Length: 276
Ligand SMILES: NC(=O)c1ccc[n+]([C@@H]2O[C@H](COP(=O)([O-])OP(=O)(O)OC[C@H]3O[C@@H](n4cnc5c(N)ncnc54)[C@H](OP(=O)(O)O)[C@@H]3O)[C@@H](O)[C@H]2O)c1
Image (cartoon, rainbow, N blue to C red; front, side, top):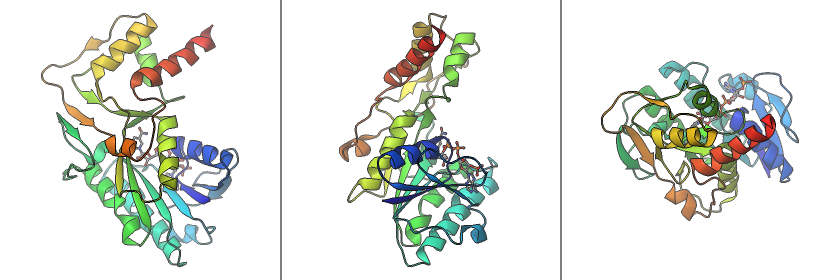
């Protein structure tokens, strides 16, 4: 398989590495001139500049995973919607539809009352994040590609485990809210799984099996670190949402880190080995 990873950062670079190690030919596209991930070929281009996308290699699949420069409506529109449009058009104009994994976010759901959400929940949010992400999920299919959106929760893993430091230092504060997350390795494994799935649905929620109150996660980390539980901030009924990944599981995917316990447990073990 020839895969183009469009936006090659935390998730994209690891996906590129894993896919190349599994035998795929991987093209890692980003704007900066940095060394490509191991086994991948680097491509320097800007998704928001159609001219820079001319001459891309022929591929069977795209993993679309850039992050906007500006966290506002125009920034989201430029990277997620225009960026997807530019790449999808460029590839289809060569007469080739590809499998397109659109790395999206559970931010498409604006639910804030602690309710459960899944792929059947309407994405009717008013905020720019939800609207632009949802809009971008539809772009590749509109150009004729076989597109699948993967709505990831908060991604954590090596190099992105700030809560361990904040709990250890006593800086962490706990708000009454539900949190949904996925370990980097499972996010990458889920993308690889969807790239191979014969007849995927049009979207999947990509979170681990245990949406958890922030207090549950941070108190567990504090206990494992042997420090005091973090201070509480605010009160009332928990806010946020609880995302359900049953569809991903039913498609044959297995989580290596089914909850924060396995995920942060592995990171804590690494941390204690480093400091031993
Ligand atoms: N991080 C999370 O917790 C989280 C949660 C849910 C969903 N997601 C989604 O997952 C995806 C990947 O997240 P991430 O954490 O891996 O992001 P990241 O580490 O910020 O990486 C994004 C990559 O995209 C490249 N990029 C940005 N704009 C580009 C453009 N116009 N043209 C080409 N490349 C561009 C950046 O490299 P250059 O600057 O060199 O171009 C960077 O390598 C994003 O779509 C994000 O919304 C993330």
